[in-house]
Image 1 (spheres, rainbow, N blue to C red):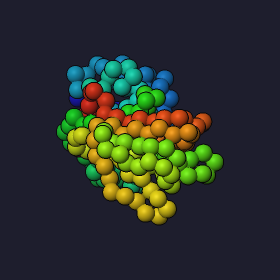
Image 2 (cartoon, one colour; image 1 turned 180 degrees about the vertical axis):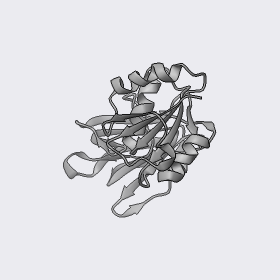
Image 3 (spheres, rainbow, N blue to C red; image 1 turned 90 degrees about the vertical axis):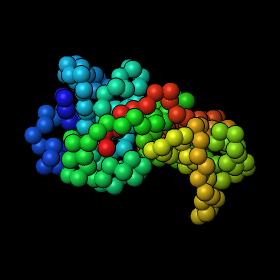
Image 4 (cartoon, rainbow, N blue to C red; image 1 turned 45 degrees about the vertical axis):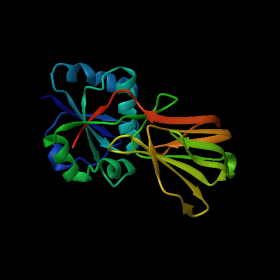
Length: 219
C-alpha cells in the first residue's frame, strides 16, 4: 500500500507520520498540488492519502477527488485540534489520529456535497446578508425545517446514512436535528460558510445532498 501525507499550512507532524513521504501545501491545498500526488498514488492498487490539517483542507481534497472521479483513494484525516469533521467522523486528533490513519481500515462513508460541487466534511453555516436574519424556507427531504426568519441554518454530514443533517437557530435556541438525504434552502439572499470558508457573494438557494458515490475514510 502506498501512503503519502499532505501536510497543510505547516501543521505539526505527529511522530507516527514522521517517516512517511510528505508534501507541504497551503492551508487549503490547490488542485494542482493534489494532482501532483495522484501519479504516485496511482502506482499502487491501494493508494492512501493522509490529510494533516483542518476541515477545509480535507474538504478541498475530497472535492478534487470527486470532480476527477478518483474517490477510490483511501483518505486518512489527522486534525491537529478537535474540529467539526473530527467530531463527525470520530478520528481523534494528533498522534492518535495519525496511528488510526496508518493502521486503520478504509470504510465507505457518505460523501456530502452542495450544488456548487463542493464537498462538506464538518459544518456549513448559512446566514443572512450583512448581519440580517436568514429569511426563507428550508426542507430536509420532505420535512420542513423552517419557514420565515431564523438566525442561521446549520448543515452537517453524518457518519451513517441517510448522510445529511440540518438544524436552524432562532436566537440562542437550536431546534433538534433533522436527518435525510438532502437539505435545501430557498431565500431572497444568504451567505454560505462551508468548513470555515465563507462564500464571496449571496446566493438565492443552497442545497446539500449525499453524492451517489461514497468516499473511503480510514478509521
